[in-house]
Length: 549
View 1 (cartoon, rainbow, N blue to C red):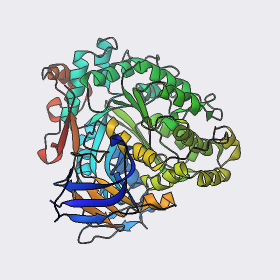
View 2: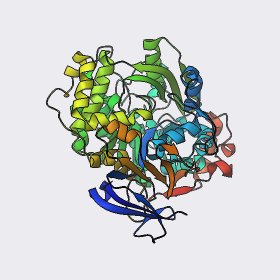
View 3: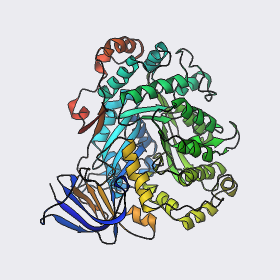
View 4: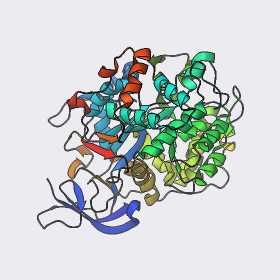
């Protein structure tokens, strides 16, 4: 493999306390090393910024819901077509790009690792197939467990405790699917919505017919994941997403975790005050204050960006609400026993009160947070906006003048209901950007080889021109090095390797199958013995991250 010396660059590697120091970064055999010989290729990075490759902790890039969103947005992709070349395969872009285009475009932004944040275990074959087909970037997926009826049975029988049986079942599911971590979406709330067509009034509401509550689901599964010591803690999409007054639900959910590690997804969508049916207001300061006082918790923001989006979620209730607002195209369906799903094309408008408030709340979370290691960058792609809008979001965080100009274009009544006009003049530094887009997501995912440039790290490196226009800077990296090879140079893809499939594993008692098999026979149409992904070409990950012993 290629040996490379990146010399003279301004290095931002916050995981190793490097903040703009001029250093050489040496690469050999796909890893960062102490030194390389004189024969190594030299990249002159003088006047440039060197960071680890970007890590996206929460996006939607593969699986049946994403594929359905592609079918729902054909018109968005007709004029965004990638021609086949000697290096690249053809594909389509738009808000929900095809697999090939997804990998290419993430790499062209300097991102080298992406997590698909919500996949039904029953659809693991589909997810794995598409991730295998997504080039360049390393990828992993989280499996949905917050509305799984088989797990409901185990939780009810244990009285809401993280029993050994539940731990074994979760570890079995990761093994069976090739998943990386556990995702809870509106825990218990999908079933509650189907039963009464409403929000979760309390996380102590009982899910009729199953004898469990959202609180018990949260405590039991979060506890089991914590005790399994998986590399990534439970990843939570709290109840009542998007509903005025849901900040109370979010705070109660955080309290229910009670000292255990957890990551809260797209926190912006869970920070609303007011009452259901009324116009929301921001309660981001309360949420960010609670987060800051509880270092065991982290979040990604799910920033809304003005313009077109595609809401893609396992939270069927949210999609039903958005359908009522848009009166346009809509898909909603169940994956048997495991989850719901909804897809609605959407447009966020600067002049709209609610949309401007959402935009402002996201910026509040970024700007009010005292610890950038706790609050990570995301747009919940494509829900709040495309990942292609990340450079503009970074500029909003780094350039106060640009941010204030954008604020003036937004609905002023909404902006006045945030803290953005209260002298909030913070501007992110390059090192803080490196934290929220690289170091913090990698650390929270338990990917110790990523998100930093220390010796032994994966040689995933992005080199940017140090431009005053931060949007242009982060949109057009000078070089992107993936696994020790130059993948992007001068804005062009030079190679398109497969990238790694990442998976996690934890030990479990194989006798758990005697418990699960009859529950499968009772509830699934798929036989228990046929459920695990056994096709080696799909299932075998390139790298397994083991649970801590």
